[in-house]
Length: 140
Image (cartoon, rainbow, N blue to C red; front, side, top):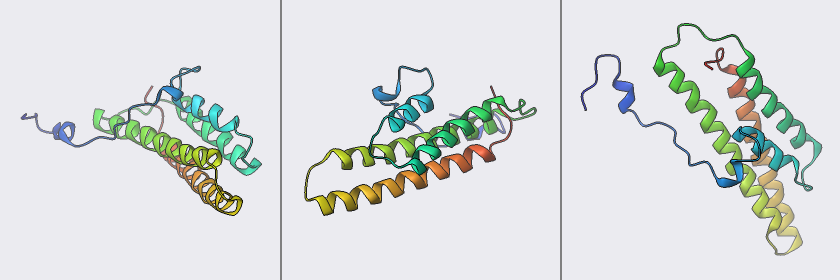
C-alpha cells in the first residue's frame, strides 16, 4: 500500500507479542502481573526481588513523567515497541527460570540450570530497567 510521505514507517515490522493468559490478570497492567508472578517465587534471591521492584518502579515512573510534547506517531510507536519488547523478554527469561525450577533431574544439573536462568532473568530485568529509564516523557 502506498503511504503519504513520512508515513512509510507504518509498513516496517513492529514488535508483536500475544500476551499470555497468565499475564492478563488480576491487575490490568501486564508488567504488574509479571512482577507479581516473579515475586511469588520462593526460589529467587533478594537481588532479583529488588530488580523486580525497580522494574515495576521504572515502568510506573515512565507514566508519571510529563507528557512528551511534539512526539510524532512514529516516535510514540517506537516507545511502545520498547515497552513491549522488554516486557516480553523479561517474561521469557522468567518462564525459562520457572520451568528450570520445576523440572526434575540430578540436583547438580538442576542447580546449574537454575543459576544460569536466574542470571538471564537478572540481565533481562536490568536491560528493561535501563530501557525504561531512557524513554522520553510519557505518551499517555
